[in-house]
Length: 138
Image 1 (cartoon, rainbow, N blue to C red):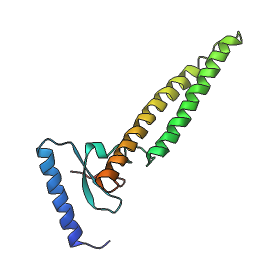
Image 2 (image 1 turned 90 degrees about the vertical axis):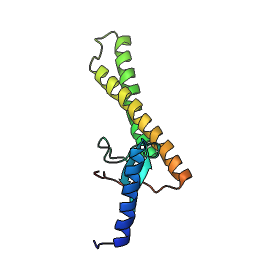
Image 3 (image 1 turned 90 degrees about the horizontal axis):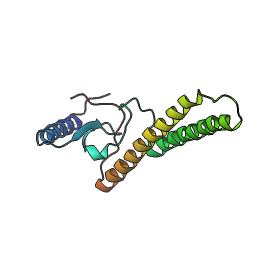
Image 4 (image 1 turned 135 degrees about the vertical axis):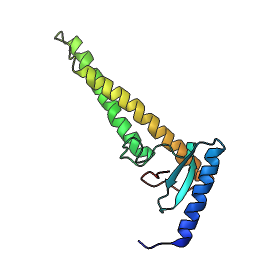
């Protein structure tokens, strides 16, 4: 990697503008873009991103797929639990764990997918670059 004086100057300008926005009370997040340059994003342009909460999925539709699988876990476990009552046997109490895990997971990941979809739409409208992976220490 070579030192790029112009890139460092732009990064310094972005960092100074970011600190000034924080001092004004704005909610901003300083991230590197996919191109590697710093960008100060308003809070509504971030959604979720790798590095926040150990997220390994990078897109809203990818998180939607995770949400769908967890929703299927919730539905399948619910059917298994309720079917045990209909068969006259002992209830499948272990299915309650899968019901809770699937229900909470589907709700949580759906919220993350929704937030990322909204943030991506705002970035596109404002012509902001895509955030890259990783966190910038301030």
